[in-house]
Every structure is written in C-alpha cells, then in structure tokens.
Amino acid sequence: MKGNKKLMVAALTVLLMASCKKDAQMLTVINKDGSCMRELTKSVPLEELMESGTNPDDGKEKGMDEWQQTWSVKGEETKRHPLPMTEAQYDSLQREHKDEQVADLVVKHYTRDFKSVEEMSRNLPIGSDYPLKVEGSLEKHFKWFYTEYVFKETFDYDTSDTLTFFSIPLDRFISADSAAYWFTGQPDLSDRRNGAELKEMLDKIEGKISKWVCANMFAEVYDYIGENYEKIKNPPVSKEEFMASRDTLAMSPDILNQEPLNNDGEVYKKVIDDYFHTNAYSSFPIVNDSLEQRFSKYNYILPLDLTYNLVMPGKATDTGMGTYDGEVIRYRLTGERLIPGAYTITATSRVTNAWAFVVTILVIVMAIGSFVYRERFRN
Image (cartoon, rainbow, N blue to C red; front, side, top):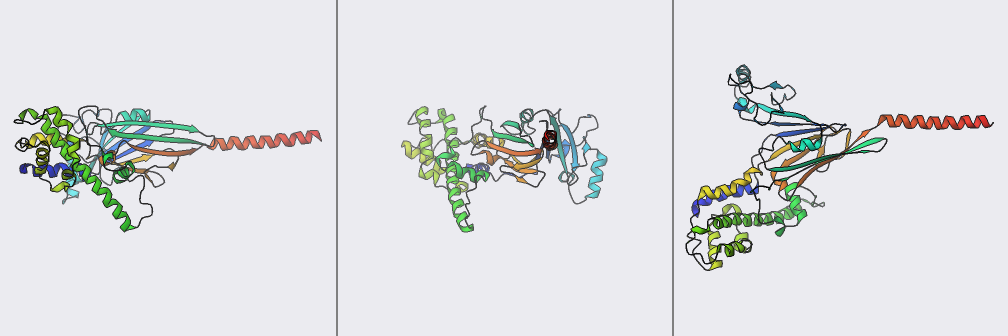
C-alpha cells in the first residue's frame, strides 16, 4: 500500500482542513419591513467575465439568471461594471497594472433582493458548490419605544443523498464544548488562561482531534475494502461480519496513535489481518483512483470559506459570534465550523420608534393639561 502514501497525505490534509483560503465575501442586508438583499463577491476565472463576441450573456453564470451579475476592480467595489468585460476594459486594466494578472485584480458580484429571509436562505448563491442545508428566520418584536429584530441563519451539511461525512463520530473522542471551541471558537474555554496554559489545553484537544482523524481515515479505507469484498481471496469471515468490526478496529491503539500525515497505510492492513488471524486483506490491491473518490467527498464541503457580513436594521445589541463595527457585523462561515454540527449565525438589533416618544409625550402633556383643567374648574 506504499503507493498510496501521497493519497493518504492529501486526504488527511483535507480532513484537517488547512484548505485554500479565498477572498469570497457574502453580504446580507435585512430591511425593517422584513425584505432583504444578499450579495456574493468572489474571484472567478477571467473567462467567466469575458465576452466571446457572439453571446450577450457571456460572463453570466448559468443557473443564476435571477441574480444581477456584475464585476468590479478590487478596492473599487462600489463602481460596478455590467458583464461581460470587454477586451478594451481588459487591455486598459493590463496597461495600468503591467506587473499583475488581470484575473487577480477583479471580482465578480452576484446580487439579489428577496421578499423574506426564508426565501433568501432557500436560494443560497453558493448552493451549487457545496451540499448545504440552510434555514433562515427573522422575528420582529414590537416593544413600543423600539422594535427588536432577531435574525438567524443555520448552516449544516446536507447528507440527504449518498454523502456521509466522518462516519466515526467526534463525540467518541472529545466533549461537545471542546469540539465546538476547536472548530468555531465558541464557547470560549480560555477562562483567563495565560499563553502557556492555553497552549497546554489546545495541545490536548489537538491530540484528540488527530485520533479522530486517524479513526475516520481508517474507516474510509475499511469501507472501501468492504465495498470490494468479493475481490478478497478466501476471506476468513463474511462481509457482514467484516463490516461489523469496523468501529472496533478504528478505535484500536495502533490506529489512533499514528501520526496522521505520516502514515503510508501499511498499518491498516496489518491491524485487520492480525484481528482476523489471516493475511487475506494485506494482499488486497488498493486502487488509488477508486479510493481517492471516497476522500474527494470532503472537498465538497471543507473548502467552504466565506467572510459573512450582516447589516441589521437599527443598532445591533447582540451579535452572537460576530464582531461589530457599528454598521456591519462580521462572521466567518467555513467548512470546519460545520464539523461539530449545525452552525448558526444570529444577531439582534433595535430600531427606535421615534413616533412612540412623540405619542408618549403628547399623552403625558394631555394628561397634565387635563389634570390642570379639572383643578381649575373645581376652584
């Protein structure tokens, strides 16, 4: 199985999610009447922006007909240009930036208005790239002097089809809070630790995460053997008995105590052979391309990496896991943040009802005036 070492390293790198970071941003604007706007901004290959000279819809992504699609120069995002980019525009940018590639200078925008948050969440502009389940809601609470808005949008893996991620569950290795802290940053477990104490805590968490990765790597290879069980010569047990032992073997010390990125896979077959007292499995040929397809499913979700910008009506009073600059709340929406479970972006804001103050003052004035009038009338 030494021929699969590069494959194992590549697959584990995906699992550990040191994925390529992109400059994609998604802006969500919530209006007071419940309507909303969403805009995705990202870098795209230059051919997705350029025209061929024959099709007026060149540059417009298929399946996104209801989205307004434009492009702009980075740093000048307020100045939008209709698609497609012309050759004259391309030449002009290249002359201005001779030492840079035009593709690195521009971004594409997808913009669309929605009547409700629910409709917006059903039409995520990245939905075709990642298997996500998204649910959104907006609640309005009238409280006389102000109206409170509570926005929520929850993202989760969509495993309704044949995709199954991480078949060995994370909670067999680590507590829910520790897992959430590692992948999302919340809840905050730093608890006023100094740098050395925090490193010690994170090292312990990382060790458990590494064991979880090793178990899942083994499970993927084990399932691959199970799917091709008819190719095993003289297997000592039936396929059903073989598959029933998967989780037990995945939790064995020989599997868990490996260095995830330094494993060539030989230990997998040895563990299996030793357990079943045979050498039938060590002689089974692993086909790189077939096994790689099993690991490629993680590329559907883990490379997700967005800066999620949210603008709420009025002034934000609770930003959840976001940071607020007085106008925009910023979150990170990444594939690894979905590993412990559904990831929810939530924010609460207040809009002052100026008319309520006016009405209240008028009522108070009228009440005082009425009281004064009655007192004078009695006298």
